[in-house]
Image (cartoon, rainbow over all chains, first blue to last red; front, side, top):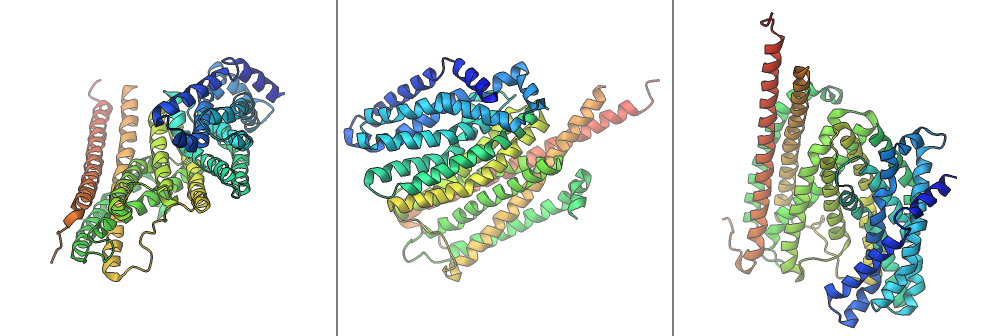
Amino acid sequence: MLLGRELALSWGRGGGPLLALAFYAATATLLPLATGPEPARLAALAPGSAWLALALASLLSLERLFERDFEDGALDLLALGPAPLELAALAKCLAHWITAGAPLALAAPIVAIALGASPTLAPMIALTALIGGISFSFCGGVGAALSLGSRRGGVLIAVIVLPLFAPPVIFGAGAIDAYGAGLDWKTGLMLLSAFSLACLGLGPFAMAAACRNALS
Amino acid sequence: MIAALANPRAFIRFSQWAAPLLGAVAAVLGAIGLWLDFTAPPDYQQGYTIHVMFIHVPAAWMSTFVYACLGGASFIGLVFRHALADAAARAAAPLGAAFTLLALVTGSLWGRPMWGTWWVWDARLTSVLVLFLLYLGYMALDAAIDDEAKAARACSILALVGLINLPIVHYSVVWWNTLHQGPSVFRAGGPAMPPIYLAPLLTMVLAYTAAFGALWLVRIRSEVWRRRAGALALRAAD
Amino acid sequence: MLDFNAGKYAVFVWPAYALTVIVITALVVDTLARARRWRRAVEQAERTAALEASPDRK
């Protein structure tokens, strides 16, 4: 029931995933302008940059993850309500992943191919983006919860959260490159999944603690 | 003794003799270290650049040591709700960030003549860079929240999350490197160092640690005074 | 005795030392300045509080 509410809110706010997707497309377009259009170089960077742009695009909608509820008092109710705050945090991040992370994950292979990556990499890119998206949503959630009630929320969340994004970026990009090179990609994928699961499991506790701190 | 330290007044009294003592120790050790440093001969392979090692390795050691101190203080502050521990954690952050920056820059200056490049994405360098970003994030969060108690608690949570993340980053890059058989991983120091280099190195490490101790104690003391001044001002305003 | 002859590596070695000296000095100066500032503030506040507490208003 919580999840349903979160999903509805998350989808409703800001036209669902459209904004994130648009941002993703925009950053992807800027990339060849920044690195130069040389196809070989662009293709080599393509999967990695698609990954990175995805992380940044997920950051976009994170600021509002807790903020609106915090401001209108709904977060107080959630904290006091029957369901533990950790569960509410879990629901919010899952909703974020479903409404923003998943569409971005599906767009990722398209973006990567547009940047010159080989189409054979497409399924791997989509898969790693989908799993990695969980860690982006949950780590991002931790950042969003910590920044509640502070000034300059959006940039602050990014600064807090980017070091935490490092392992999934490393694992995901590694897995994609391994897959492309015909090497063992399963290890990378497993490490990525393990990290995502850890974020999913432990993140809500940090988020709830941060929310309670902000509400106190 | 730890319990006695927990009392702010006791802490101030402690720091008033401990900090200058540590400062003096740091200065003496630093002088000895530098003398040993510049009387050591240039390395067979690295030439004169070996001298950068004597300021790079201590800085790198401090960057992780200070984060461990910050993490420990954060944990105590969070679990025991102790204001002095919170103050200690926040006082340590700028010091840690400064040492990390020194480690990164001196490492780069050491690496350029050695590897021919300013930067390599190996486990150690990447995780030190992430550590630097964690310090910056911590200080940004501290600055962004106005309420002190809340800022302290939020920062403690962030510090602990970062503490977990750091070994993960370090080992994930090891995996990344072994997969790609990247450029040679630079191994700094290690026990197989001749004593003529080991002596200045250890002396400098101790000097840096003593310096951190002194600076940290003084910063915590400043924090205690700041709160006291604020509390007195509030009372006077009534 | 003391070897300062850096040769071709001078452009790497000396900036490293210079930066270290600058950063550590800045840390020391900032830390001590901060301490002095807040100690003065406490002394000031204590003096004000003592004045207010003394029964000279009645």
